[in-house]
Structure formats: C-alpha cells, structure tokens
Image 1 (cartoon, rainbow, N blue to C red):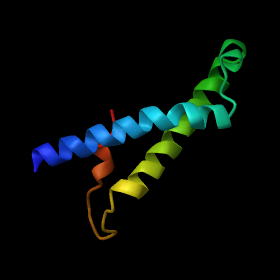
Image 2 (cartoon, one colour):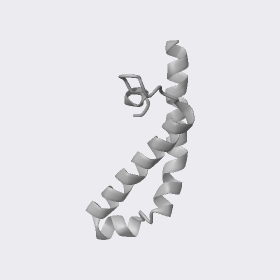
Image 3 (tube, one colour):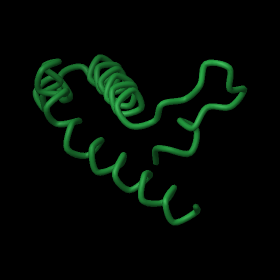
Image 4 (cartoon, helix red, strand yellow):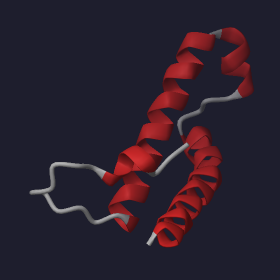
Length: 77
C-alpha cells in the first residue's frame, strides 16, 4: 500500500508541475508583475497553487465526507 501511495503522490506532484504554469498564465502572474509588485505576484501564485491542488484532489482522491482525516495533507510537496 505504501508504494501505491507514493505513486499517487508522484502523479499528483507531476500534475501540479504541469498545471501551475497554465494557471499562472491565466491569472496573469507574469515576471513583469513579479518585478513590479512582488506581494501581488505571491498572492496570485498562492491562489493558483491552491486552485490546482483542489482540482487534483477532486479528480484523484475521493475522500468520504464522514472521514475525520484528509489525504490532502500528504499529497503535495
């Protein structure tokens, strides 16, 4: 089972790495914004990451609503 969880973790992180540039581009979190207003850029990037993590968890980790624990804690870097 541990090997299976590692595989899920690796897959989720691969999806995160592939989806983040697309999400950042859609949010207009550009290098120009980063140079001009770092706090705004960090805020956009944090928002993008949270959205991507929600998408990945919804697609790959069905968790019972009655569960006391979330698998999300161990899913991302």
